[in-house]
Structures are given as C-alpha cells and as structure tokens.
Length: 183
Image (tube, rainbow, N blue to C red):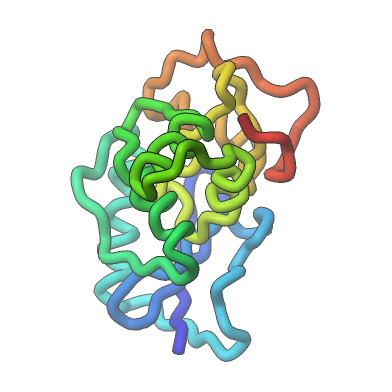
C-alpha cells in the first residue's frame, strides 16, 4: 500500500509517496511522470515519520542549505535504474554531472566498455524521487540544461538555489520538459 502527503515548496506544490517506512516518490505536482509509482488506492497519511523527515529535508533544501541527510528511500525497478540512482545520489549539493559521466560510471561498474548516455537519460528522466535523488544536477556534456520532468526553468532555479555557476550552463533554445536528447 502507498501513502501520500503534500508539501508546499517555493517552486510549487509537491506530492510525497511512501510505503509506510520509505519514501517511494516525490514529485512536483503536474510534472512529467507525476505519481508514476503510486497505485490508485493510495491513502492520504501526512503524519508518517518518513514524510516528517522528508519535509524537514525539503525545508532545509529550500532554505538553500545542504540538508546533510537522506530520508529513507526505496527505488523500485531494474538493477540499471537502481545503479543510476546510486550514482545520482553521489552528486554533491552545488555540483553537476553529465549523462556521459554517469554512463561511463555505469560501464565501469558493470565491466562494459561503454554505456549509452541516452539509456542513462531515460533512467534519469524517470527518477521518481526528485530533489533528494538529484536528477536536476545532471546536465548535457556541453553543460546545457537538458530536459527535466519538472521543467527546464525549474531545473535552472534549483541549480541557482544550490549556488551552481549558471554562466557555463546554456539552456536549450526551446523549453524541454524531459523528452530531449541527452549527451
């Protein structure tokens, strides 16, 4: 069974989902793949400890600070998706990585010569726990702000909040909400 709670952030309303012990989803309401891991019979239960911890994390984050902890999370899906999630979790607050670097790390961990950055982009783009699993910190190989399920404008604001130097990160010519080419 999944439980739900809501959080009002400075960048829009968010929905949290959990299994009772772990956070299983966190989305900006209305974003691409919004609530993609929730069953239709999810129950509103805002006072679960995992939701309290997540709200504390979000409060610190939206105040511009590295929260310094990760609420208990659970990622469902393939070993590949879990590996990409693990790599994203290692991207420090205020830093960025690229789809190509993540692909190279997946290749290294699996003993392959290479891994498709596009495949990595698919896993990054379908990340069910935004912000805490920092998919917004993944940029194109040339530093461009590629697609973000919550919108490229929101991605830019998140990186600015973290103090990322935006001068070297060009935005794509058209707003792309998650379906763009990844490098």
